[in-house]
Image 1 (cartoon, helix red, strand yellow):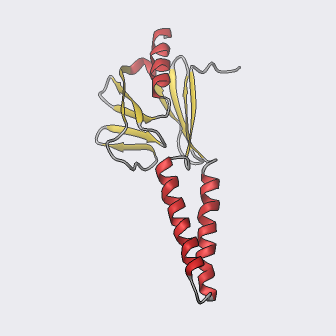
Image 2 (spheres, rainbow, N blue to C red):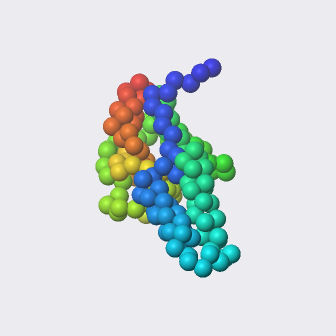
Length: 161
């Protein structure tokens, strides 16, 4: 039986613009050091190998799913990489849904199911996040690139149940 999804989004590990920039600057540094080495020593080839490796790893990371967000009529489900546990949030226990900025920092590390200070964070890319508060006061912060659609889907799912 096919499940009805009100919202579905895949967050990829390597598609965050800031970390792509950092990796490309590192690769550019390695290629520059290789090119500017006037003696052309055998050890200078290491710069070329490291630069090429950074680019290859960046390309592979662009297709690795960090986590997937799905909203069904009763649950919000977050499934992550290989060994991560499935997180299922019962939408009947959610009392408040808000769209807020994820963080004030310029660089944010990707996280999945990070428990800290009474908040559970999920983030891969994007500036905005959906803040869900349940009856117990626990706050789920879900970073997304389509925050408006996620808020709309959660509220629509709460209306259906």
